[in-house]
Image (spheres, rainbow, N blue to C red):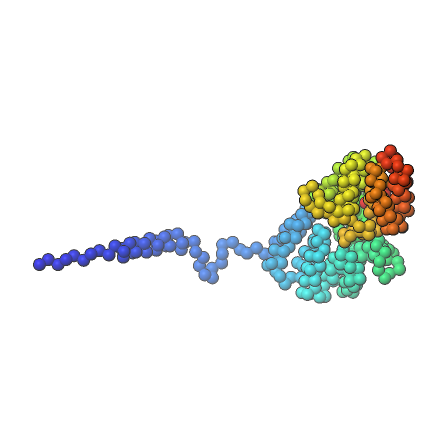
Length: 420
């Protein structure tokens, strides 16, 4: 008898083949690229100092948002270094990010409460937020810790200048302190951007635009790529009626910070100052494009359109600005009340100008039922503006006399100059 040959288990054969293939693959392709434990990686971890150097270079180039991100990378690596938070907060103030700057200045103080610079930058951020009492306390602390901190003196000049400009604060003569502090800042830190900027700001407040121009130029010589300083230099040029130079600085500021509406807003008003209302309306429209829901910017555009002899467009934009409504693309514009809003102060004379120019435009268009209500609002709300009652009454007279669109604009309507 012959023994029967055992049957082959093909399942086991296939399984063994698969296991052999897996082992071969791992041996050839996976193990050669695997990192051996406790052996350093070929690429060393980047040090925080290299990020700081990069951030400083970005700041010098005017790339403020990129500099902010790079400082954050440095902080990620060295979270316990208070100087990094100070540097980040300083750049954030230049970029207009005051809330973020406050947070980082406070974080620096938590790490080192005896840092004069941390208190100084904290005070500067509070000044920009309009929190003048807290800013005063912070800067006093900075100067108690280091009386020769030139930047703290510069920030103090900004603080006292702002209190003088806005008519607030406990001090009887803040402008003299601002003058003294700005001079001391430039003496202690002659190569400081903020010191020359603070000195220029104080000179503008004291009606010395020519000297302010020199100080802004000194600041620009230190760093040519800071949008805010070009913007303020343009304001100083406008004060001397050097409109072409003002426009040049506004355009530079817009190039460095295209999201800021102010360069275009200021350009429109500089051109209006010399009677070029068509160009002014173009800049005003561009400013609206930067922030389409801001009623103040639409009021400015409406005013320029009215002065450029485009009353229909002016009425449309005035309506959105002062009554509120929806834009063509469906965005909602909240009405700008006579007393201002959270962004724009009711002390801004331009708001008064928007209201009574709208009143006259309505009367000239024969919309007298609206004129009656608006005239009363103007008389109630802008009693301190010598032009407002005259122009409101003029609008009322147009309707009473029934002359409407045949009447010219009143000669007493001012060309406003108080604001940039």
